[in-house]
Length: 361
Image 1 (tube, rainbow, N blue to C red):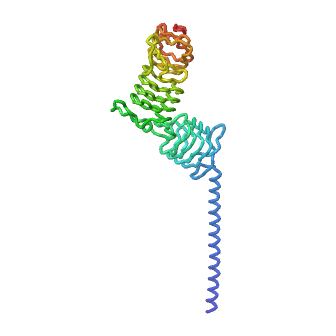
Image 2: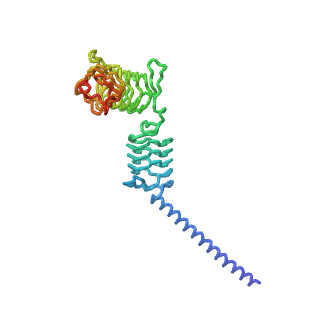
Image 3: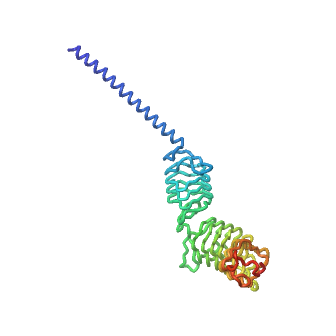
């Protein structure tokens, strides 16, 4: 019996050892497999063949199609990558890290940038029409070709229209704006009619399409400001400095702030200071290359001289009856329903023009 018990015990011990060896081998094998899988996963992430979460690998941009070699994905890490000129239409970059990336001239139309990190991302010339920028982190660098409707870039950060435009307190006799303007402010598209901006610092400000009708800009500094398609009718510009400003498409008339020659009805003197090629014109219109003179009454105006340049000016609906524009540069002027110098309508000719209809042209 003792022998039998000993034999059984020995068998049991050997079987236990075998089971432990089998289990140990299985565990070791599992560890190896897990290591291979993990290693493979890490290697795959580093290879950059997908835009998976946590993967950091900069895609290459195809020279022909402009498509990235890696498909964009939410939370992808493409910080500091060169994506210049890339076709990223409709890309989903929600929560992505694009900090410091170069997106110059990239097409991001309709892309989702919700909660993406765009700190110091360069967006110069990028198409950002239809982009969803809600929750974007950081400030971008450069000026894109377009931004989504209802949004503006303010000091590099995306803001809604309401957040960009200042409040004008029309309950005051001198309607103050808040916050006060600073150099480089973006007030494009804002309604600031009648606002009191006397002495305001608007150096290099973006006032594209801004309504400054009847606003008081006495002594304001607008050097280098962008006033494309800006409304300046009846605006007070006494002692204002607009040197170096962009006035293409500006809409004016009855500008206050300069002495008017009673004979020519032209603004005289150097008040306000205007950019090169611009002058205070007839009936206090600001005149220069690309000026918007739509529906202006310039009848019997004397605007002669080669120093006057109206290249590309919009003369739609303008009355030029009896005017003298001898020597004025009129290249690529826009005529439409314009009353010419001799009283005829520009629409009577194809293409529309007042050339040869008197007035020195």
